[in-house]
Length: 205
Image 1 (cartoon, helix red, strand yellow):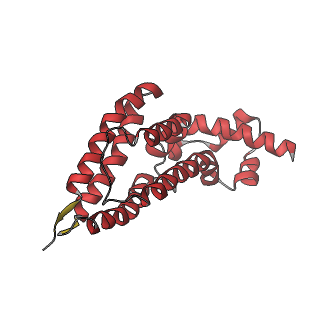
Image 2: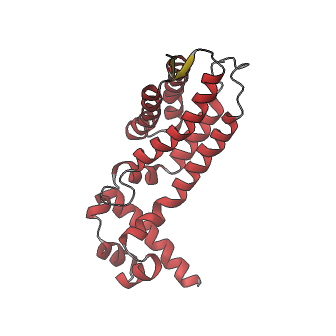
Image 3: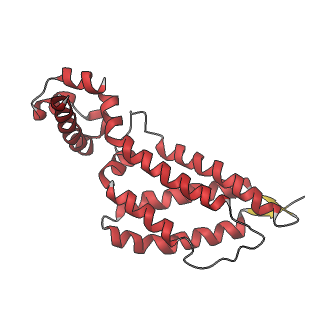
C-alpha cells in the first residue's frame, strides 16, 4: 500500500509538470513513466489511463473551488434584498478566499484553463459559468421580487456570469503574484457587483 502511494505521488508530480509543459493532448505517458522510473502499467493500474491521471492532478483543486463557491452562494441566498444596503468592500472576504485558493493551486488552475484541450475538462469555464447562472437566476428572482415592476434580464445575468469567470481567467493568465492579484481583482469585483445590481433587472412588461 505504501509503495503504491509513493508511486502515485511521484506520477502525479511528474505528470503535473508534463501537462504544464505540453498540455493534455501532447503529454507523453511514456515520458512521465520513464522519469518516474515506472512502467506504463503503473499508470493503468493506479489511474486507468491518461485521462484518469489528468483528473487526479486537477480534481482536488476543482472540488475545493466548487465547495468555496457553493458556500458563498448559500450565504448570499439568505440576503434580504428589501433591507440590503450596498457597502463597498462587502465581498472582500470572499474575494480574498477565492484568490488565495486559486493561487494555492496556480499550476492546476493553469492546466484547467489553458492545457486541458482534448480532456474531459476542456469546457470547464463553460461549466462553471453555467453553475453561476443557476445560482444567479435564483438570486436575481429574489431581487426582482423585492423590486415591484421589475423582472430578470436573463441576457445580462448570463453576461455578468461570463464576465466574472473571464475576470479570473484573465487574472490567472496575466498576474502571477498572489498579493498583486488580490489588489488587481478587488476593483473589478466592485464594478461587477455594482453592474449586477444596476442591470440584472429590467422593467416588466
